[in-house]
Image (cartoon, rainbow, N blue to C red; front, side, top):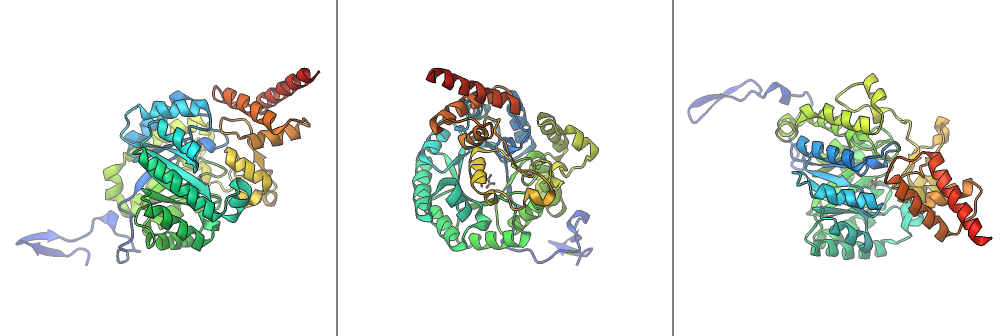
Length: 424
Ligand code: AKG
């Protein structure tokens, strides 16, 4: 009855909906929907650091974290402190800034990682472990029983440290639904603060996201976070579908940067949510700051030229499908699995596009499996222990400045030379 006037306590009031609230697609509000009640977990400084071109020094991380907190995001997620010494120092430094946003760090679901994470002073720890058969086989080798046991032990530990804890199943959409629900129910029972659903390879459609989150909503009482990759261009639509189904937290990154084609972009999500939830968005987030933040990050990862060509409030870089980096794999755990079986982290094949797969091996996030593969490509021979030693040297250098392929190759070659000299 848009446009009607009615009387409340004797006073005539207009019941007409403001223009921005009217859409031709309005339906009876779903009681599950959180489209006007969600929180943002901003992961530019974690997922975004996994973007092929990203190298954030301490000063840049502090600028980005401060700008995001000022913008209004509720949480800022940082790279694992276990990734490198500088990652740990930066995490501690950001925790000490006293930002309004809560600071999280993202670690593997192990006691070793959780201990280091809790020692940094973060407000919350995001735990992750792969649950699809791809990742169970090629990443960590654990079955569901072992995953549940580890999850409960680590969650209890983080809680005992008085730190907020989230548990996420990597590659949720290619995991067995029954296994997944059983695992989520078990972690909910021990009092996890949030469970995370991850579309790790970007294969899910909005309908599949809606169905899984809605089912999960009936199984757990804790909050539900979603982490949605953009390989098939559905990340923003999937985020909206997740909120409609009852998700409470959405992971974003500025410009959508991340592994391969990245994840839900902060600017894109804001644009989507402004249409149906303008009041909520305007009450929490300083939208007028988004351009400044996008420029800050675009400068830091050197994609400014592309953006200038296509300026928009909806981030454009990762809307190019497949983007230049769609088949680039950077994080240590990704590299290990992708080298064993490309399907672990790819839903599309580079060959179909006439492109090549690239396993990044020159950053602080690089793991020893990627270096082992490079050592082999260079025709050199080293034991696993020696590869781990040279990986530590590469990470040390990568903490200081961005490394080119040649830099990494010369660290490997000179280490190999030293080994040969020791032998002679
Ligand atoms: C992914 O699965 O793509 C991740 O980056 C981890 C997501 C999560 O921790 O929820």
